[in-house]
Image (tube, rainbow, N blue to C red; front, side):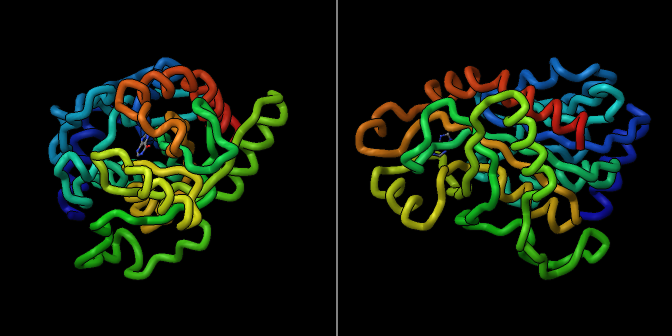
Amino acid sequence: MWEKVQETVNFIQEKTNFIPEYGVILGSGLGGFTEDITIEYVLDYSAIPNFPVSTVQGHKGALVFGQIQGKKVVAMQGRFHYYEGYDMKQVTFPVRVMKSLGVQKLIVSNASGGVNPLYKVGDVVVITDHINMLPEHPLRGYNDERFGPRFVNMSAPYSLAMIDEAFALAKEWNIVLQKGIYLALQGPTFETLAEYKMVKAMGADCVGMSTVPEVIVARHMDMECFGISVITDIGDEANIDEVNHEEVLEAAKKAEPQVRNLIKNLIIRS
Ligand code: HPA
């Protein structure tokens, strides 16, 4: 794995000569963030050695390098999901690459289903913690100490400093930001009503099919993480019949300007 990451990093460095400090992973319907970047290089996943190729509608497949007010950023336009058939080492491979390129801070976005009764469709949630219910762990197997330790402390997977900064921005802008716990299930089915109830009973506020593997691997390498989720549907009796991919994309698109603004200013200020 170490050698594969180095091979990919060498390729990218030859093509770009760019040392990013911030990594951004863009979830469903949130890819427009790249318009906020002064783009210097774009590499399609298909052109990058060892990179998987994204298969989901609404997810593009490119690494975008550029600056936001002088801050150097690499954004993943389109991510890899376990349900697509990749194993967790593949799903998280780009995070390993980002770290080796120089990224210290990782910002991850996604769309999720809300089970917190205070949430509405379109709400933007700052992820404060997560529950990993995915069937495979990205750190299972041989541990290469060059990446990080065998046993990873997960007491604060999401940077408290970045969470505070996000709420400071929300206060300045007079906008409502929710906070909550994200639970990851493998999908690709949306949850049954009984499963949404289980998610709630387990102590989570929202549920999705991504993010947790990337954050685990980022924490393995001691990267600072910030997670943001757009509530695209509500998992309760009244709303469950509306949950489908089109609704998810539409709701995510509506919240996109707010998410973009938040990520942009977090990068500028943190
Ligand atoms: N469940 C799982 N993943 C999702 C959902 C959901 O309700 N909405 C968006 N992604």
